[in-house]
Length: 369
Ligand code: GDP
Ligand code: ZN
Image 1 (cartoon, rainbow, N blue to C red):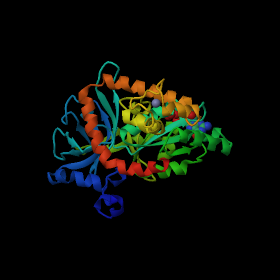
Image 2 (image 1 turned 120 degrees about the vertical axis):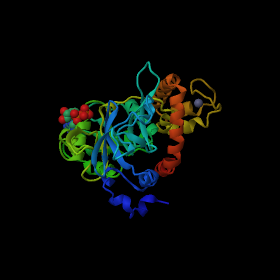
Image 3 (image 1 turned 90 degrees about the vertical axis):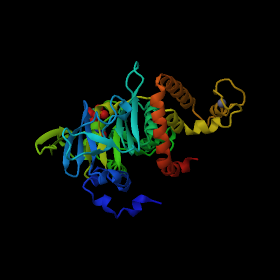
Image 4 (image 1 turned 30 degrees about the vertical axis):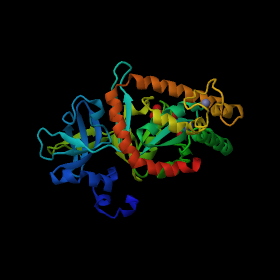
């Protein structure tokens, strides 16, 4: 059953609908609404406090109460939370189970993960056409995106620098080959070419822009928001006590629909425990590997290796196999230093998320099988 086709209910006319409130969240929140709690979405987090948009405006609340000192359970931008309208001090009582989550390990020494953004539907990877395409880097970002649970999208930005449409089509095709199941769009934020397709894509749900510094994320964000993001971010809000305050938002409502999350920490994020993400980026290699003689084949010197024979026959590029090996090794190393508690949390998250999101993605990927 398709929930969105039944969307004549109250969720679509809710004041939070532009922020992504839907029937699913409404149903999850019902028990808390009965307790007199208000739903809201976190638009910014800093040092134990967060800004939450609610039907009554933006309120500032303490986050520490939820689960102290567990970085995986700290409220983050994009979370749907319950706040107590009369609470003083006000705090976030709980957040609803996350549909998706971007996580990274906080540092090389500490082993715990940090949630960077929650409930992201589209992970838009911005790649600049002003510099040579680095497919390895694209694959790395895509692994991260798949792992989060969001649907990746690749934008080949600054497309005005490739004036020949045939060349541009080739580039789009090349990236598509490295990105099974991922839409690839050529977009010029400068001239507006291809922007409509991106606007349509991010027009429902919540999106993030990922990619290297200088790739064109800010310019694209401004084009999507329709004005300078920095101005839009400094929203004037009424806090819980009726005072006017200026808050900086990391979650913005787009004029033609959809929500954009843009946090400094998320933009240049690297790889983390992304085993299943790596598998999705290299799905054709994992499919080939099923035909290797040995189930634990490393595709190095083993006899009857289907992966190496695909390289020999030209079906699989050596660059792609090397990239797969590199990402797999790096990922194993990160997994080894990530402690069991975090992995257990991620496991629970995945089982829940997979049940919810798998069917939808199966449909999208089916044409690549
Ligand atoms: P960010 O670091 O990813 O946010 O990148 P910016 O948005 O700041 O853009 C980096 C540079 O690329 C700036 O000098 C922009 O003017 C330029 N740029 C951004 N989008 C385009 C585009 O569509 N075409 C061209 N030619 N340049 C662009
Ligand atoms: Zn093999």
